Length: 280
Length: 357
Ligand SMILES: Nc1ncnc2c1ncn2[C@@H]1O[C@H](COP(=O)(O)OP(=O)(O)O)[C@@H](O)[C@H]1O
Ligand SMILES: [Mg+2]
Image: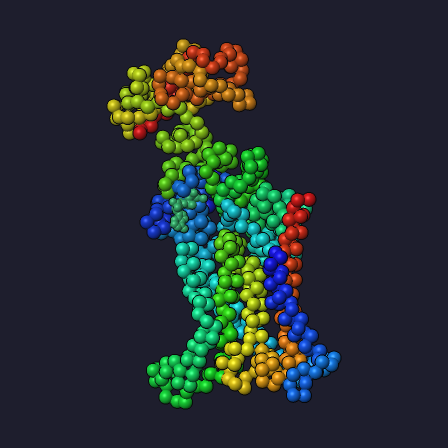
């Protein structure tokens, strides 16, 4: 316990506190920091220009989350429905991309989406002769990259409750007169929502702060919050504003995580209350 | 009384899982409003047969006729048949009321009708006070009643119950056996219950089928099966039976020690063939009068009081296993016996059943 606390303090709390402190100072005239107190960095975060980037980041992360959840849940469902002894094999393949480096995985998408990349060549092979489609350096490419990178988390998060679900529950629903679709909506989905929520929060939080994928697949001028923070620190040399942006980003992530924790806690609380009632 | 009407006809039904034959050419008629039991040792295909009736498995071969219509390929949600699962399979995220209402909502009934029917069945199953609880807040017996209410509220033509009392402790089982029977009578629905407990099926069933290795061995009333088992397996499986191995003679079985056990020999057994003569423990008399057709002496090895009855283990020269003898406490009082005593046993030829090996 104690060593963990030391590490957490050294590697998380102290750096965060430093960044937070930075956000309350002015930018020096030649870069650097002018140690006079100000709140204008935070005001600037709400400037339409920057607020717009926050909104765009949230939209991209939200879209990536939605797509990842739909694909990931379907994949997890298929794996959980497969014969027991095959399930570990399928899961292994689902998480296989994790064994390679994030950058390499993202570069692979460049190879795929390039003007004369694999997809274009595939189209040509099928007889397409027109202009190569512009896929790389678009918002779609960024979303595809994010979905691809975080999909395994969603599959694992959804697989857990799906594989634990008693198959007789779905049978009971059918037996009582429900169609397969109704059974999914009223029995299977509600009982596996915690997995979906965990996977979704994961993808959203990692996507909204991501700066590698937008930089590589979105092109040089494509900016999400992560890129903005990166630029303030390393290009514009405005550390205090970069710190304020970073704090705003952390605040958003914390809000999402807290909302999920609260919801999970409520569910657990309901269960605990239920158990208490059974004893009484 | 009019001839009972056949509700469900199982017609030469088989089911293979790959190379395993779980159900092997079973034909059975189940009558309107009866309490029917499928009995057999674990793995004999009871659940598989029940799942074919519910629609979760499709027969490899044969027909299942409900009211004369073949439903073998009808999906489970389109059959007027409901199954009470061995695990109960209650929806954990729904209250008792929501669990019970679910099946009626699927029929798109009016809210008011759903409410009144659910209230009625909750009252019948004495679940009213628990309507707002979640399944995890219920005891085993209460869960079992919710599963029953959830199926009954649909008023199916046929209710299937897979080992419904399996998860309950012994005392509760006894109470629930009678309760199930009362309920069946009250709602007037045909019940098909699966069990591996022969006592349970004797207590509850109007008629029962004994299965082994996917085949039907005998189908009749509990009384008829108890008194006239169709074979050695059934004789052994249902109730308690004493067996004397030997060779068939003209009017009985000659035991290893040369003593003849008198009894009616089935026409299928040729003289000299290996066979067993059998007799129920309650048919054996202690210190019989001179007119008993069969008699033997033996040594009492153990006694056990079972309420009004006294059960004796008597070592005899007739068989390697000790005879089980059940006498009333009255008879035992008249002539007390204790372990180690020499006793004389006797029984009538009419109480002897003879089976081939
Ligand atoms: N889905 C299945 N796949 C393969 N074999 C099965 C399946 N279901 C049942 N069996 C086999 O069929 C036989 C009968 O099983 P079951 O109907 O469950 O018996 P019971 O309910 O009488 O205990 C067993 O040998 C069992 O292993
Ligand atoms: Mg079974």
